[in-house]
Amino acid sequence: MQIKKAEQRNNIIEAACQEFYSNGFKGSSMRNIAQNADVSLSNIYNYFKNKDEILIQILKPLMTEITSMLGEHNDSSKLDTTVFYLDSFIEEGADYYMNLVTMYKKELKLLLCDCEGSLYESFREDFIGLQCDIGRAYLKEMKQKYPDINANISSLFVRNISSWFVEILSELVCNDYPLDKMRTFFEEYVLFSTAGWKKIMNI
Image 1 (tube, rainbow, N blue to C red):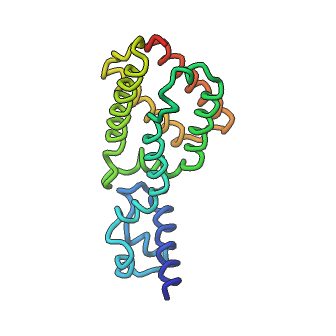
Image 2: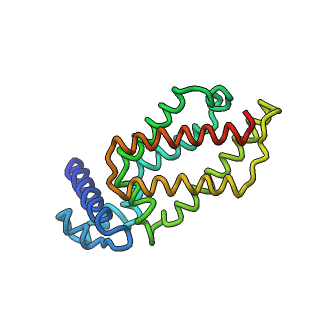
Image 3: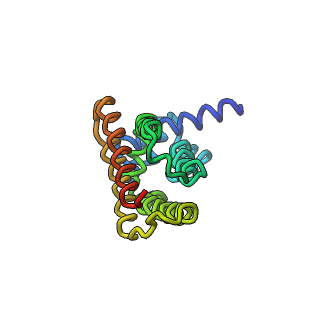
């Protein structure tokens, strides 16, 4: 019985994935999800109270990855001026972003572009705000470690750089670019960003 319940729950999640990916969160209905999962509408509520609860499960792996990415941004290994001179840093950065958008393309598109009406509808703005906070903390810690660098970067610049990153992710997951072109883009993006921060911080 427990195995059957687990299978039914997974069927509901799979049906919801197809529904959300096709119609967006707002355009999806619990009735359609129940029908495609071959479960009655009344029974689906024994597994999930509402669409938001299903959405949380669908996006859980992606949200875990995003949390990890943000949490590791200011690791001690990153708080070092040598990363601005390492080719390996560019390669690793390009690899990471490439894996992110290929592994979680559908989830990112749903999260960034099709979550109107859900508990994640303000995610874009929240994510930009988190990036700004992390960026300011990074500059503060770098200034403490390297007093001669320029950490007096305007909040408007940090805000727009953070916003640009979100727009980049949206552009890549909402369109079908060839993998080789995306890889080239990410190499260019990391190189451009690294050179830009190196210059503006006087490193």
